[in-house]
Structure formats: C-alpha cells, structure tokens
Image (cartoon, rainbow, N blue to C red; front, side, top):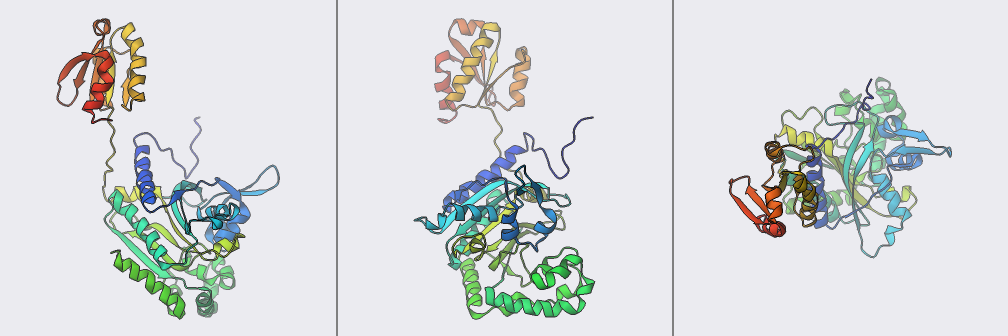
Length: 425
C-alpha cells in the first residue's frame, strides 16, 4: 500500500506552486518598498522560547505544539508562529544595537500546529510575517497595518475589512483584568477547564476561547477600551488618526483580543467579507508587543508586527474568483529532426537559457508533429525547427506560434533575433 501524506499537510504541485510564488513575490516586493529586510530562523526552537514568548496560557502552547525530546534530552518544538523566533534572533544577535532603528524584518516559511484541519487551515502551513522592533511611535503601527492591507490590495482582494482595538498598557490591562475576574468568577463553573485555569492566570484569554465563545457572559464581558488610561487612549487615537490620514478604513471592535499573550496597545485583524469564504473570516492578525523582547532576555524594546497564512489568502482569492496574472509561456521550443540535430539541440537550448530566454526541447524522441504538440502544451511563443538540412547550412527555421509567421535565419543569430522579438529579455 502506498504511503499516505500526513493528515493536515498538502503537496503543492506545479500549476499551483506558481500562485504561491506570485503571492510571496508581491509581499516581498512591498516589504522592499517599506524597507523591511528578510530574516530566516530555524524551523525548530527551544520549547521554552514559545512557552515564554507565546504564553503558557494560550491554546497554541497548551494544545497545538509539536514538541519532542532530542538525543541530548533537550525539549524542542517545531515553530507554531514566527514572532517569538524573530525576537529571539533579535536579542541573540544584538540587533537592538544596530545603527538603523527600528529594525524592520519580514519572514516567510512553514509553521506547525496540531489542530483540526479544515478549509484553508493545515497542521503545516506557510506564514508570511513582518516585525518592526525598536520604535514606540504610533506611526509605525499605522505603517505595519498599511503594509498588511496593501498586500491584500495588490493581489486583488476587494472585500477586506480592518478590525482594530487597543489592549492598553500594563496599568490599563491590570484594571481590566480585575474587572474580568469579577465578571466571570461567579459563573466560571459553566466554562471549560481551560477557561477555569485562565481565570486567575490570564482572564483575557477567556475572551479568545473557541469552546465557550457563545456563552452569554462573553457578550457582556468588560471591554478593555473602557479601562484604558489617558496615555493608552491617546496612543490609540494617534494610531487611528494616522490610518485616517493615509485613507485606510477600519472598525473599532472593543472585544478584539489576540490569541497570544505578548500583545499590548494596538491589536488588529484583517477579515474577508465575501460569500463562500467560510465561518472563519480572519485573514491576518497582528499587534504591538512592547514586553516581549524583555521576556526573552533582551533590553526594553517596543515592537509591532503581523502574520498571515498563505493558504488562507489562496482560499480568499478562490472565494472572490480572482485569477492571478501568472505567465506560463515558454519563449522558445526547439524542434529537432534527426540524430545530429537532436545532439546539437542540447547546446542550443542551453545557450538560449544562459542568455535569458526561457527554452525547452523534446526529450522523448517524438516525431515533428509530436514535438509541435508539445510546444503547444507548454504555450511556446516561438518554435525553432532544426533538421539535417538546416544544420548543414548553419540555419534554423523560426516560427511565431501566435501569427504563424515563419522565417529562416542564420543559426548563430538565433539568440539575438529572439532577444529582439521578446523585447530585449
């Protein structure tokens, strides 16, 4: 019996992988414009990093991590998200001492969570994320949000919606925490075991519970925005005023909390309001995490970021019936007739490729008709026909597959002629 692919994973085949490459290229090009640089961190890290960085009261740490013990008896975890690893690298490589501040980074790679697979959600998924470390200016919050929104705009999504909230500073969250405990404590017995354990440790996490989200106390729970002190409220107003100035529409949702413990002040999600996308409409989430660097052993450093799943974005594009503009054509297909021509075509196709021309040839010993069919299947723009007579005369026949026009040219001129026809590629 054939070995099956693990549940919650997928093979991304040719024809589909080009969509991934296009999205990644759009995101990376925008990051370049915003002056964010790529960082690459290991796929597995010390388990302690995620317990500290993500928070031991979160569903991710409690239920979803892929954790194992290596041969040195060290507890390691496949990364469930990207921020903690980026901050660990920021601290370990002393990037807080960089001359250019804030340090603006982006990452792209596989993450791992043991959760129930469903449409657009996998146990191994690819996350693109951005982190800006070293600035407490609310303008950087607006910049990060605008970068996220513009990625979705650039790939063509139209029905996105920005939801924003403030989780406040430490003083504001302490007052809110006390109010949440007072609110939930009399009826905490009606909640799941996770919520019961969170009541004293981190009651804000109760609001993020998937199991008890329909409980009536969730609707009437105290909102953090009502407990913001003057400083936190001013910060939030500044962020929203910048969003107004750059023309980004938003909705303030006082019940929005993020599923990770490290967030404070600005929190946001980008949703898709399109029919057929499913019950879970979140595309992207992010926010500010001013205490995370210290938690991981670094100096006091503010930070803000976001992350999104590429699988979720592809599902959103499908829901909105958006076709990505992916070019699939081959510039030139070499049709070779006869053994001598077939042998020469190996060098010829290599020369074309080295000169920036996308080229392909027959590798199956097909006759001329079969090779032309192969050229059609790969959407070749031009077909160059090389037979024994052409080879003896140092010539080659070049056919434009769109117009049907054909010309015979000197064999050494094929590269130059094709470059001219293709616009100097």
